[in-house]
Length: 331
Image (tube, rainbow, N blue to C red; front, top):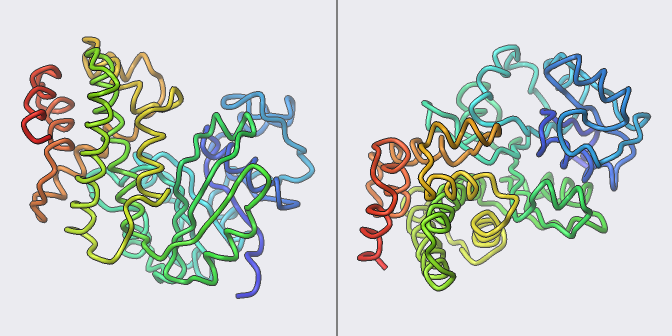
């Protein structure tokens, strides 16, 4: 493989829109799948996504839009998946195993497949027989809203195939995006799930009016817990302080743009989980991730009290204040 070829974005949400902007900073053309024809029609009328990041303008001559996911994949060489994890199975019902043949499939998901408790690389390998060498992951401290503002962002491309990872990293690197490569595919995916859970914990503490001193101790313990879980589930040599682990966790835990932190803050202020979700009108992946990690850990039995506490608050009606107080004994 000497070229990344035609790049396709799957997903017309906030993250998919940010990815499209980043790719087009360094590429002349993309294929872009959106589920609804009316969203595509709105794009043609307005010159921007009618539903998300409306201040990001696009040159439509650089985009071929699709509402047929299988055709979008077939017409591309590298496919970047930016679909919210709860909807992945619904979208991929229309895709055949053969559609992925010869493609480099890159997950930009920030979550885990609910009920299956699989990260995207495992889902692709198990359900569509995609070779692990043809799977990549995009992750790092990179909020869509900051991409829209053209603030410098950072992404790591992880793959077992270092050549493919490097080609994609070089293809999307630009003045607003710095890239690097890694071979820790599943570890990076699980870190992306965990950081959303920890951001909910940070938000709950914010809502309960715990101060910066406590937040610093919370996040340092989240980092230790993340390292412990990754070592227990995907043992390999890794440096948890690198940007795809700690960097992503910190920006998700502290940023005003973090949906997961927002969900946690509302819960800490006294909103019920359901009411907070309805008022946000956006998906906080950590809600689903907390349940998946809890169930996954029933097999591995790693000590993860922070993630367990978030699960109990979200799903077992544990009072947030009591849950956070109980955590202090672990710090």
